[in-house]
Image 1 (cartoon, rainbow, N blue to C red):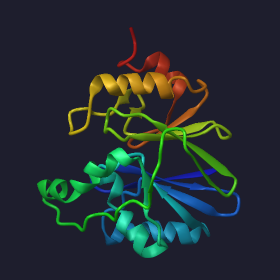
Image 2 (cartoon, rainbow, N blue to C red):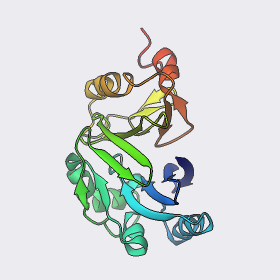
Image 3 (tube, helix red, strand yellow):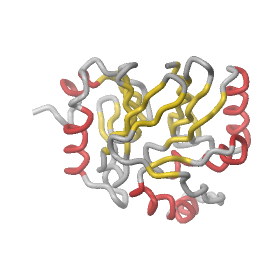
Length: 212
């Protein structure tokens, strides 16, 4: 697995390009915000001779789906996400207007992903883990073979996702992380939706939200 990170939009979301041996790749949380950032994504994919075959969303807050329509128009791919993210997608236009932006709503999902469902392409296998709390349908994507997990806005380096937005719940998020992320091997690398990477072991021992 080759993992590339591009940081997009004024909200600085991490968009990951997860590529296999043949160059087929998944775009995870496509946050490219405008024509300039669309061009950056397309140039990166072309320069690295990659072929997008899947668009995945850990969750569907506006910063994580800014680029979904571009991906549909350019690569004929719609997102795959959890079914409980439908209300979040439906509120996209209202939320962007609150930020003072006028943007087309993202396309409807191609399919919904359930907890423990496995997404496969090329030589890569990603297991979806339901980690609600930041949103009701938040997912993490875990690669056992490569020892890494993409956590979206559930778990960050030294922090956790906010829970004060619609669908958020603090106790649910804490439980989700402990049940579905902290049970992964401590050596697992964590690739979050914002900021730098970390590790499961490091977060178990040092994350202030879990220290007793």
